[in-house]
Image (cartoon, rainbow, N blue to C red):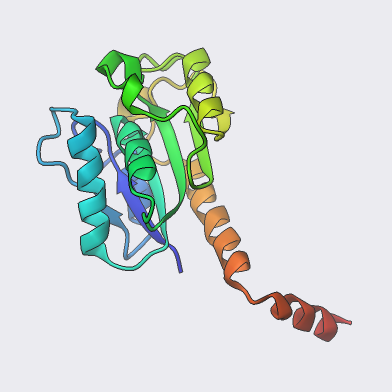
Length: 191
């Protein structure tokens, strides 16, 4: 069974944030906790993701990241080829260029299936720039519309799309882990 990894952005995700809401659905979910939530340092935050996964144990992991946490997750995925992360959801990623880290992020496909959820009114990343980054990473992008930064300030507590993504990825991983002959057996019993 896949486990859930929550990767918050600047200042963490408060109790009413959708990431905290999502975490409550999974008893064995793990949250990445940064040493300094107010100091966005791509390499340190990326290393913290790796350290959290090392301590947390077996995966596979479904990583759900927000804002600067999304950039840290992308960095982690491209610098840790043995990462147990099986899929990533990047919600309202921060603009790498605003933080001066654009050159530290890949311009190639990420090693895991990735979905980028963008907002047309996000003050931290314009929609066109977000779509460019998603294309660079060969990620599926979703335009959520005029929803700000997809945080508590823009009206998000529950975020059902994130929950549906987690469930869909769990089902995908279960299908991929099922032996090839299992579907033949299921079919033969159905006939």
